[in-house]
Length: 240
Ligand SMILES: Nc1ncnc2c1ncn2[C@@H]1O[C@H](COP(=O)(O)OP(=O)(O)OP(=O)(O)O)[C@@H](O)[C@H]1O
Image (cartoon, rainbow, N blue to C red):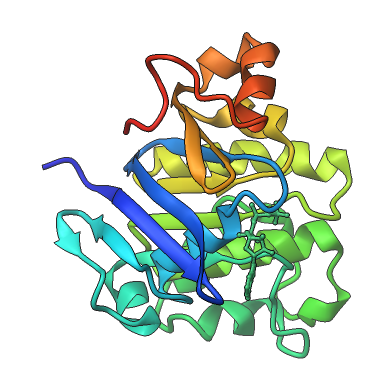
């Protein structure tokens, strides 16, 4: 069986109102799956329902064939879900090394987590609050990796970062996926996400309006635009 994160007909409500409706998608190990869509479409809500921050109200979420619905957030993390939430949530008073060791202790943990981030390796004893925004985002990613996840959910990695930093981070996300992780990437800058994504899904008004190869949107901005506006694209919407 190929390892992957699978959402089947997922519905999520907030404050009694349905926000996400009938979303089915697969994020396979080794690939970057982009989840795009306009503000308020429900992207963050969907990621939160996968990691267990909020419950799903219908459908199933499974990882590597195991159903996650009944598991709380901690159990889902143990099962292999890592969630990098919006806002670069480092522990500001802890050093770079300590931020990683919070997740896992043991020989080689820091070296392994920082394999893709040589700039952080030079600053192991620096308090996280003294890092730049880009370095903090790297640390959040490194910390997520320390848990050795099967699936990594990344919410708006580029928020507030200079384009040059985002350009540095994107290939890292690609490498991460190449190491065997299923990456589900929510990103406000669709063109950036499409550069590294294998597959893309567009969520508009809580439902998927495009599911297909990222290349299908990279080369056709008008299709991306139509999907953002909520126009289901024939033959590709709603699938996995
Ligand atoms: N805690 C909450 N209680 C009730 N409604 C909420 C809550 N959080 C978000 N919402 C609503 O859910 C909808 C989807 O929000 P969500 O943050 O998931 O969208 P998004 O696609 O991630 O948007 P953005 O790109 O702006 O972050 C919005 O209408 C929002 O107002």
